Structures are given as structure tokens and as C-alpha cells.
Image 1 (cartoon, rainbow, N blue to C red):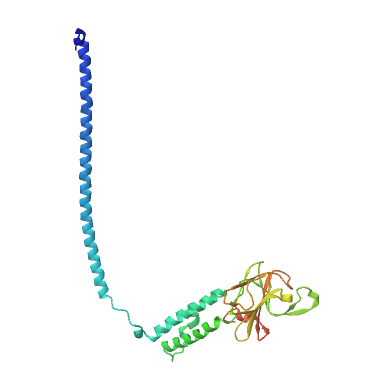
Image 2: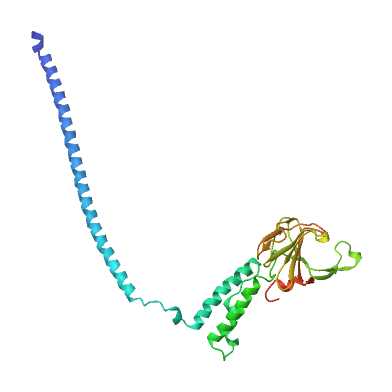
Amino acid sequence: MNLKAADFSPSAIEHTSKQLLHLLEKRTKRLKRVKHYAATTTCIIIFLGFSVYQLRIQNKSSEMEKQQLQNQIAQLKDQIPPPPKTAELSKAQTYVQAIQTKLQKINDYLGKRGLKTYSMKSILGDKKTAAPKLSDTEVYSLYDDFLTHLVANMAIMPMGYPRVDVQTSSFGGRSNPFDQSAGGEFHPGIDFRGKQGDPVKCTAQGEIVFAGRAGGYGNCIRIKHVNGLETVFGHLSRILVRVGQKVSVGDKIGLVGSTGRSTGTHLHYEIRKNGKAINPVKYLTLNS
């Protein structure tokens, strides 16, 4: 290597020194960064170790508290007396439970018919009116028998409303709706206001004995029930059942219309006893 005199000039030496200083500064910065990263990593490791230690302490504390609670629960269970056996219940309590169950069934029937439900107060009445010579058990027994009979009959008796709406025509004599000058006529049922297509519901368990066109009744349904009772639904826009079909309380059997001899959209409803029309109003509520 051949060196020239210019290589040893003051400017060349100064330039070389600056390069060396710049290189040293870069290495120093790198070392500082490495130290910073190392210190940060060390702090993170220490923090994680401390956190794990704290979690272990908390877990041990939670386990101890859990064990204490389990011990307390076990002690409380030992202190609770066993439930009384069925045989040890008083007869009055047994009757109350039976009555409440039957009341629920009755209220279900009433709700499907659009009627108000019964309460214990309305059935048992004022305590002052109860017979003073009867014990609580005897009183509950009498009402239990009454409710048993009532539940059995409500499902098969045509009670309540085939649809809940305003009555537009009553049972019995009335003027001719088509010709006021033609004199009066006998109306064998009651009419309920309704809109075209409103649902019509069955009011008791029974069997469909007629479903079709029936002269002035238009589209008509007849349902046979117990004890010679029969319900009739007239002027329907649509029939949803067939002859021989079994139906229950609340079943949708048809739709309101204005077929047959009708002055407008409504439902004609009859109840017949051994083939003779009777006033359906008597069967709309339990107290009629």
C-alpha cells in the first residue's frame, strides 16, 4: 500500500476521527438499547412472577373460604328438621291443597269461556256465615265435594261465550228484522256482534253432528253434548270442523260471517235441550 503525503494532512486526519466517533456513537446507542430491553424484560419477568405468587395466595384463600362455607352449609342442613310425612299432615291442609288444584282447573275452563275466574273468598264466603257447628275439616270436605262435582260438569256443559262481544239480539220474541210491518217472530238464540272471519269457539266437549248449509242458518254447525244438550252456530263464513269430529272447550270451529237469513255479519248461537231451544243466557255465567 502506497501512502501519499496527502493522507496525513490535517483535514484527512480530522475526517477519519469523525468517522470513528460516529461509529462509536452508534455502538454506544446499540448498547444502551440492549440494556434498556434487558431491564424491561427483567421487570416483566419479576412482575409476572409476583402476579403468579399473588394468584396462588388468593387461590389458597378462596379454597379455605369455600371449605368454610361448605362446612357451614353442612351444619345448617343438620339443623333443619326433616319435612313432615304425608300421613302427618292435617286433614284440613290436605283438603286445602285439593281445593286449590281444582280451583285452577275451574279457572282454566272459565278463562277459555271468557268468564271471570273464581277465588277462595268467593267460594268459601265470609267466615261469619260458616256453620259454627262444623269443624274446619268438615267445611273443607263439603266444599271439596262441591268442587269435584263442578269440575266434572264444567267440561261437558255448554257454558260461557262462543265469542266475547256485544249481544245484538236476545232470545225470545222480537220484531222481524227484515220487515218491521210483518209482525213479530221468535228468535231461538242470541246474536253476537263480530267481524267477517272472527273466530268462533266451542263452549263444551262434544261431537259434531252437523256441519254444512242449513237454510236460514246459512253455514251452520251443531254439536251434541251430554244430558240431551246441543249447541248451534249459524251464519258462519267458514266451517272448520267435520261431522263425527270430537271437540273440546275453546276449540276453534268456524269463522263469523253473514250467510243465510242474515242482515249483517254476526254469530247466531243456540242451546237446545232435547231438541227444544232454551235461553243461552242461563249458560253464559255460573251464577245465571
